[in-house]
Image 1 (cartoon, one colour):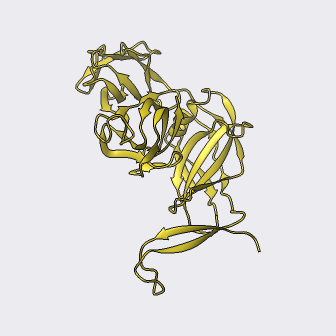
Image 2 (cartoon, one colour):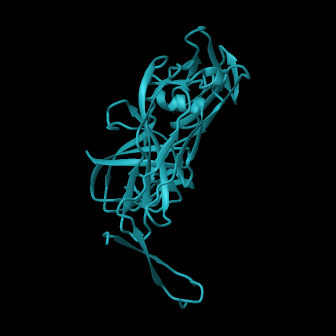
Image 3 (tube, rainbow, N blue to C red):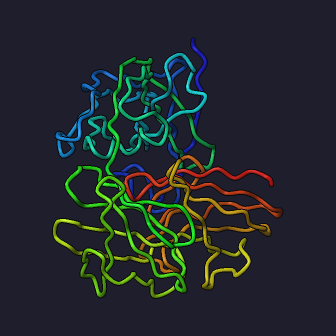
Length: 331
């Protein structure tokens, strides 16, 4: 008889007519050789700005561990032949192996790792993480690798002038709408400059104009800046990701310990001294948006992350706006 690994999943409730109204344990059996997920189809990865709104679909098949499990799937890429030593996270999803992404979104992700307007050979895979409510941990199974050539396109940009640091907003579709996270100082009004045309834009109360007044942020911090040079509008939205929790300096109270954004990697990071306890990530000192859970599977309103005493650098990657992963290392 083949050896089996027994995993006990605890649940509360009625189970037909066989069990009484009390806690019971149900037994799930993990196969000796679980069936790994597969990556079946990869779309054409020759990305073009004119096709920025087109949707690409990556199709796979599900992992089969021998029982019904809660699974999160990650679509990852890496430079060909590197064995995913530095994986590029493209998408994550639960129980869904038809993963879809707009050309412009995929281009933005790949540009953080690949040179623009050049062909790069990539390896791609689907990685599945089985999370067990029993507290016995998680199991990871990856598909066989598929290789494909990808070509990204460079983005038109506007440079921020006099903001205090070198930063830019980019147009993913090349349609005159430029978006990015920017760090602003309330004492340093800024303008934006088109480096190709030499045009400088300013504005007031959301209205953009050529050679207009420098734009002032209401407070210092991170913002999501949107500039529309065709509609002549702009929008500043506060976007400050922070740590909150009894492991953090201010506990569960605001202000949160604010993170900084790295435009080159698309990640948020902070060096912070923690005490033993829990923490979560949230936006603008508010619970409307918050991420918690294990390092490889953060979800909206997820469980508290676990922190130990010490000084750490924590790096957060936000995926699809409502999920993510993080790394925590001694520093």
